[in-house]
Image 1 (spheres, rainbow, N blue to C red):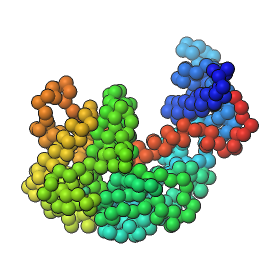
Image 2 (image 1 turned 90 degrees about the vertical axis):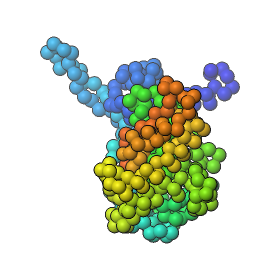
Image 3 (image 1 turned 135 degrees about the vertical axis):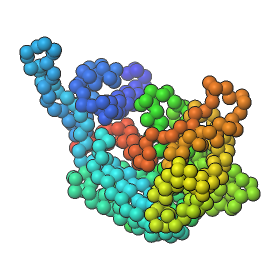
Image 4 (image 1 turned 30 degrees about the horizontal axis):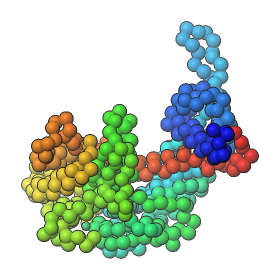
Amino acid sequence: MASSPSGSLVSADVRRHNLALVAHRLAQQGPLSRSQLADVTGLARGSVTALVAALVEAGVVRESEEPEAAPRGSASRGRPLTLLRLAADDVALLVLQLDADQATAVLTAVDGRALFRASEHHGRPMGDPGRVLDVLARVLARTLDAAAGLGRRVVDLTVVVFAPIGGTPPVLVADTDFEWGEVDVLGGLRQRVPELPPATLASDGTVAALAELAELEAAGSGVRDLVYAKSNSGIGGAVVAEGALVAGAHEFAGAFGHIAVDPRGPRCLCGQRGCLVTVAGPDVVLAAAGLTAEVAERGLTEALRELVARINAGEPAASAAWEAALPWIAHALRIVSMTVDPEVVVLGGYWAELAGSIAEAFAQNGPAIASTATAIAVVPGRLGEDAALIGAARVARGALLDDPLALATVHPTSVTI
Ligand SMILES: [Zn+2]
């Protein structure tokens, strides 16, 4: 490798890869000793020692002496053990989520610990992005203040929105929850909060899908092909193929709310006719169930909770509204399933609470070619309402740990390995 003309480039890549490996393992399994780190990374001891030296000098990893557990039956107290843990104590990650009820901010440390949480209801003013962005900016500013108070600078901001995103720069598009059409959320925030940290925009369905995939992986399911479909603020989701998100050419992949299921249906804000969200979206189902006033008084989340309770109790209007929506939902999931052939469809939002009836409706029109062994499972998600927040924080943390020296408190210009 050293003799090739690009040898130094290759070794720089290897070093970057190994630094990331050490940082990820410490985040997931730390604190660890150097020899434990060598075991879990598969790297040589000498290599681990050099990588750790660079990370310690950069302030990203901290050493501490802890007494080693004495061997069983031994009277001796065991030698002190030097353990390594992620430090990066002066940085934080911020996830800001906008849904149909409120703006929520969660500040986390690089090791995933939650440091601060704030939220504020916006009252869902229809067709008025400015008022909602004002609330979002207020929650953001409060959280940036909290970070400063904790002595941390925010190195990454992910803004999670409830509708598909697209375009360059990315904007929120085809929103039906607020009747917005297209809104440049990051631009609007930048106007209101000039000291905006480096920010990315994410659709709630995509980050929630990644979080649910990680849950399935942690449970040892081995799932690699997954469709995530959710309904809370609108209808959305994501497609995961071979463990990776399918973004699509225009990043619309997974915008299941805008699958045109009824060619004679009502015109959607996206311009199509009969989108799933226009015939089975949360507002449509809530209106049919007689819960429109509930939405205005208590917000969408509470109204959907009430809807689920009434459906489960067999209340006639709620049950009829759900029975009317179910065939459209199952129809859309069938189209998606035949297109991407997932192992599992994971349901989020209030659909998770009604997964049994969706699975039943989905199975009713299943193709005869799908034997029991190849049938697609339809299951509720495990993460509940925080799935998108958890997923966004996880994605941001992963990206930071891929380049741990960028978190340096003291820029390690003199460090060589
Ligand atoms: Zn549409």
